[in-house]
Amino acid sequence: MTLLQEGDFKVLRADEGMHIRNINDVYIPATETEEEHIPYYFTIAYTPLSMTFEEALKLYVEEEIE
Image (cartoon, rainbow, N blue to C red):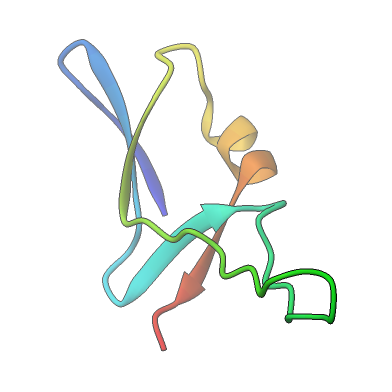
């Protein structure tokens, strides 16, 4: 995972063969009362200019694409 500044934007990019999700967005299996929740994955995201790589690591996790 890399955080790059491109012009007026900062871009968080997943490494090749990887994708990123919010650290709190986890898989939840279906129960009798709730539907299954599948996390939202992405390979690129625009972030605030003020975000540091350390802050990104606290918010996002990179995982291998299955």
